[in-house]
Image 1 (cartoon, rainbow, N blue to C red):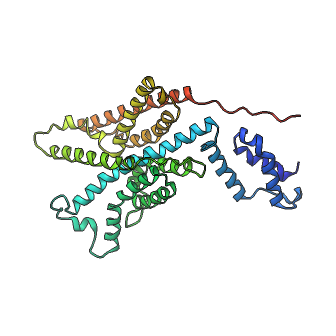
Image 2 (tube, one colour):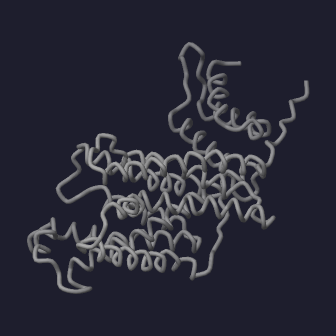
Image 3 (cartoon, one colour):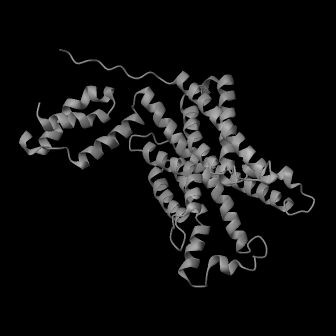
Length: 352
């Protein structure tokens, strides 16, 4: 065995053993043929493009699509569910942010006195960028609609545009403590975008859901916006007990709402699996377990152990309780997934 062949076989170890068993020899021969005549004295190595192609193939095989083994297909479905659930939540929040932006322009009443300052000088690039960011929620809605209507390429493109508007303000991104906290709190979004890129590959099944599914986050966003607006009207009232509201506030920011939605989905998944046999598949609990990690990390950023006033202490205690609930749900979801996860395909050793 030549040095180059040995290195190609080492790279191919990125692939699952069951996949290598049937295709390793063919792939090694193709790589060696493309490499040309090289001796060990030349210290030949696989090209970076070849290594990248093998790594991409490994991801595509492990997140199986149509025709994949049951275990790899289950992993693929779980990652695709992470993308769908994450984009659903982001589209719902996009409706809320869009409502806030339209209100700042006076669409739902008189605009604030300083709305010109908020948007920037008339005719400036800053104003144009702020308006684009304000309307960015439409991109998340369109991305989710494209995904559930079996157009993953369009969803990926719209997601990239939405991320550019989400992370980069008009004056550029300065990496201060505030920006790092924002990035930590947006970890669920990052994981969902990665799941979209990795799970919806060319072999993934194209499931075209009904149009009303694409409208679900819009309806949920309208209801959520109305509920938050109603709650905001009570907070400034002098009769409001801030001690009582301090138990509610940690659930109302984006990461708190994500935590609430994830806990509700986890409980629903567990109950339905007990009552409905069709729900006893590994994909949904595995997807929820994956989402537990970024949501828990996002909630960690809300802990303020240096708080001395009673209100902040209560909010910290509620946030800590959210973390405990997530850390309990995570292992429980993993157990539910493992119980129904198909076995790995057997690898038949080559004949001597």
